[in-house]
Structure formats: structure tokens, C-alpha cells
Image (cartoon, rainbow, N blue to C red; front, side):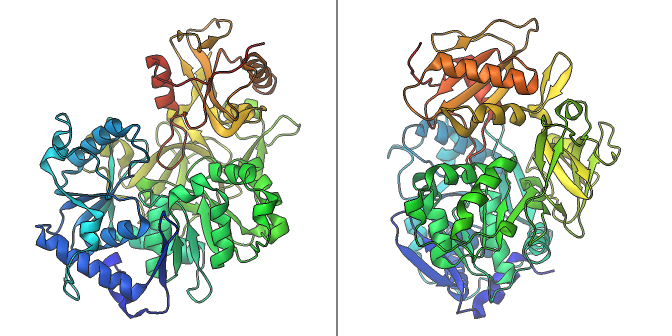
Length: 573
């Protein structure tokens, strides 16, 4: 089995394709795979000169894509274990960022930290309570870039079962968990993605991605896996998409990208934000694999996206829903190539009882197929006792195979709870129908009211369709304690101690709060038979989300209770 280091070494002969880096200032830097290997060797030697040995953890919080990727490969080439983390987005919440960074550095037992060129703390050093940061050696990205020319090949030897890198899960805050991804995991999952799933061809394919490189879908899907398949890629800064969503598809058109992926929220944002004028001159007929994953997939959102961009050449068969998670390296299932969107309409009442019964009337929940498991990988839906469930029975999704990671670094308890006898318990709920996997939601996020289970994303979708609410920017959960304050708008109290709470971002700074609140309560009551007890509105960008854009329901609930959410102001009727 080839390790990633083997694949990098072999790429040293490839001079006609590689990685094009687009920096945050818009400048481009194109490196052939031969030049990428040369840069990796140079940085590997520099790290070795700084005292980095095989197995040492090197934390990377580097914003620019070229600095990040080349340093990541440099650490791997030195035999070290890179730990990619999200860089700070603004200076507004730097204290919280530094505190979380310190916890992860401590959990990873890191020997070195490589940051961007912007200082994260004053010259006097990190805060006193950030003990791990005061002890770890820190370098800036520019120091790595200016490293002297090193050996042609540092000669680090790694075995397939050696640790390749630590992927800290996006939900980690107070108790960060680092997934241990081995070289065997990377090779297996890269092969599954590029060959079994995408059937990639380096002569015709080109990947285009704005996805965060510190997140598994961006890092493995568009940096590591393409190395194994010798497919060229274009990497855009994540901030470019956030600030100007049209930059994603504009780059696909300009670079003739054939493969690109994004989470569901990006599809919604593209439909909302990209104007007809911005689409002028685009030709998206080059796209043959338009992946969607990393969060629950909404059928209507995907259809709206496909309909909007079909006039500029996007093929209906390009869409490729998928399912995966960091604990399985990245991908677990892929939809088939050259097929249109495949969905399943099920009865809501049966769904909450643990069965996916096909709907016979208009009141249905539509779920998107995430495809079928990869070869050499086994996916089961199991009950609470670990027994496999049958067709259309809802249970926890469990995964076996060479992509399943070793566990969580330094956390035997969490590893034992999630990785059992070679089986990964994902915490996701789903079912199989005609061989297709459908994902319903997270078991920890289930809403239980009066003894019945509800999936929060079903309620969030209803609220998201209300005029004035930002698409996909909604969190729904139960809360045992009524919130206080002028902005905490509580409706009539339910008979249960648990209240159903909705928190949503609004699209405009001024809106009629009472009218929107009534519309939300009415829509959820009509569609789900549920009463929303509290509705809270936030300004744009205030809803807690992970670094990859997923809404954090549990953090939103905690901040609501603590009174730290920033509520939007609006007109009252």
C-alpha cells in the first residue's frame, strides 16, 4: 500500500500539472506536483533543524492556502504529525480563539505551532491561562516560506499504520477530540473517493475548491486524495466564497473545473446571492461531479441550485450527494455518477416512530439519498443493542472498513464509546432503502417532546422558508429553562417542562418581529403538529456555527441560557 509520502515522492516527476493556489489578495501561485514535492522537502528539512522528529505533533493555524498546504506536506515529509486548525477569522473574538487553540495544543501534546503572519497575542506572549501556548515553540508562515533550501528527500520512513495527522472534529470546544488518521486510512479513503467514487482521470479532471483546508472535506478531498490520483486542483481562499459566493462558480468556469464539492448551506447561499449578471458568460457544462455533503442535504435547496444554473450549462446529472465524517477519514458513501437527484418521500408520523414509510399524501418529509457504501467498506443501520436493522428501519449508522480511523488521540474513554470492535458508531441516524443510505439527523440532536422524537432539521427547514429568515440559518432545540430579557420572546407556556425553542438569523436589520413570530409558530404547527414556545431572532452572522458552516445547536442553546446571544432589533406591530 502506498502511503501519502510515497505518493508525494512519486509526484516529483510530474511537471505538467499540480496545484494552483489563489491567495486572499487574489494573486495566484501555480506549482507543479514536482515543485510541491520540492517545497515539502525544503520545509521538512527546516522543521527537522528546529528539532521536529518523527511522530511530533505540529499544529497549523495558517490562513493562506499555499502556506498551509506546503507546510502540511513539509511536516508529513519530516515524519511529523500535522494538526490542522482553523485560523482566526477576525480580531473580535481573539481571546476565545486563543483559549480554544491552547486546549487543542495541550490535548495534541504539540511540540510546535505554525501560525499565519498576523500576531495572535501581544509581544509579551499568550495570556497566562493559555499555558500550552506559553510552552510550545511558535513559528510564523513567513518563516516557513523563507526556509533555506533543504535536502532533496529527507528520507522519513513511515508505515501504513503510522499516524498521518490529527483531525480535530468541528464540534470540539471545551473537550477537543483529535481523530487519529493513519496513512492506511488516507490511502484507502483517497482510493475510494478518486477511483471508486469519482472514477477520476488526470488527463481530463480538475478539482476546484474553496472549502476550508483545516476541514476534512477540503483537506482530504481536494489536497490529499488528488495527490494519489495525480489530478490537478485549484484552491481558493474560503473567505473569497464567504464574501463573494459567485467566486466559487466563477472559478469553476474559468479553470474548467470538473469536480467541486460544497455543503448544503453553500448551495442555498449561491442561489440567494448570485445574480443573473454575475452568471453572464459562464459555461458550467465542464462539471461532471458536483458533490454535496458535510451536513444534512435539503432536496429543495439542491433542486433550486440545479434549476438556477442549468441555463449556463450545469447538467442535472452532475449532482453527487454523499455522506461521511472525520472518524471515517472523510467519505463513506457516494451517489452514482451520471444520475439525477434521488430522494425518498416519507410519512412524518412514521419517521418519528423509527420507520421510513413512503408517503401517500402531500404531507411528506423528503430525504436525499447519499448513495451507496464504497467497496471494501460496510455500512449498517443498527438498534440500541448493536443489532442490524432491516429495510426502512431507522437506527444509528455504523461503519466498518479500512477508512475507519484509529480513535481519538489520548482519549481512551471517547475512543471506546465510538470505536467498538472495528465498528465506528457515527451518532448519525438513518436507514437503507433499495440499497441507498438516507441520513435523518444526529442522535444527540433529537428533540424529544411528550415521548415522541423529532428531527430538528425538519422543523428548521419549515422555519427557513418563512419570509425574512435567512436560508439554513436556523437552530431548533428544547430548553428546560425559560430565558429572560426584552429580546427573549416567550409564547404561551407548554404543559411540559421542556420548551421548543427556535433561533433564526434575519435577512434584514428591520422587520416585523410579531408577524414573523406568528408565521413561524403557525407553519410549524400546521406542518409538524408542534407548538414553538420561544422564537428568537439574531442579526446576520450571529448564529453559532462550526468552522465548516454547520449550525451549532447545543452551543446556541447554551448561549441562549447564558444570555450571550446578540439579538436583532426589529419593529413591533
